[in-house]
Length: 242
Ligand SMILES: NC(=O)c1ccc[n+]([C@@H]2O[C@H](COP(=O)([O-])OP(=O)(O)OC[C@H]3O[C@@H](n4cnc5c(N)ncnc54)[C@H](OP(=O)(O)O)[C@@H]3O)[C@@H](O)[C@H]2O)c1
Image 1: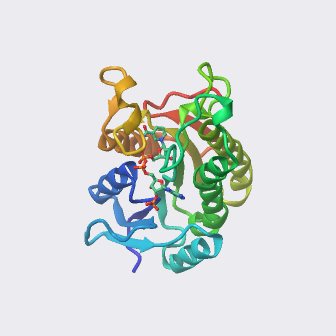
Image 2: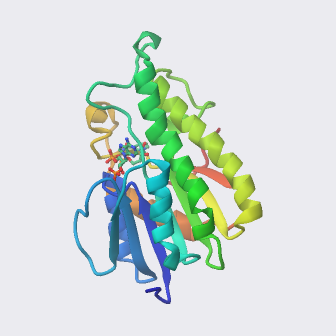
Image 3: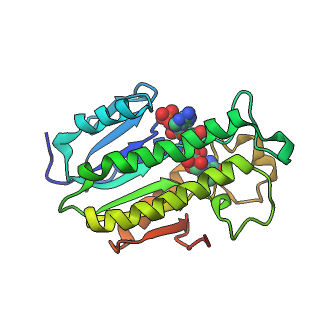
């Protein structure tokens, strides 16, 4: 059943930041229902929470969107949280010799293709009278202008490609879903499985808790205006060079 207030959608919901966003939205009285989408089954239960388990092939994702038709036009906040940096047999490349087709394909699928498929499939669902902010988790290392260190070839390029795709989506959304604002969001270094191997190198006070980052993003989404543009912003709301 649709509620009077707006709803929130978290895609890639089982990760550290996804979970923190769900908690933030569950505690926000302006938000009626929180829909969480993940490969995993529900991590907890709550009367406001509706959990959907899926795989990330396009037909499965389309069926998630079809099953949410009763919520059409009701979403005010959508967060697309997918991202991988390392895995069982892969670690961010320090040198070009460490690049492999398998690693590039896995990272591009999770970081670039899955979020782009959601942006393609969600347009009709989020289009409507309710102002809707859609944030994809990018990263500062996806900035071409800010790349002073090198390395991390696949991850960097996957986020740069996501930014580029989002820019193109923003132009079409501005024409075909005028109530939507797209945000490429850098959360800072956040305490999660993803960042664990790198905690030793994070400066004092710069390893954020997921709940802090969820608060930052939620506030940013409240403040940003619908302007038909893609914003590439960090947790403090500061623009990042492309
Ligand atoms: N943590 C940081 O320091 C940091 C810094 C900069 C940017 N970010 C970005 O922030 C986002 C969230 O990161 P996190 O720290 O919360 O990481 P996390 O706890 O490892 O969560 C990873 C997320 O990615 C999804 N995922 C994992 N493997 C996938 C695959 N093969 N295909 C599609 N989706 C997959 C998971 O969705 P399921 O629920 O379906 O499992 C989960 O939501 C990512 O996009 C990451 O790149 C993080």
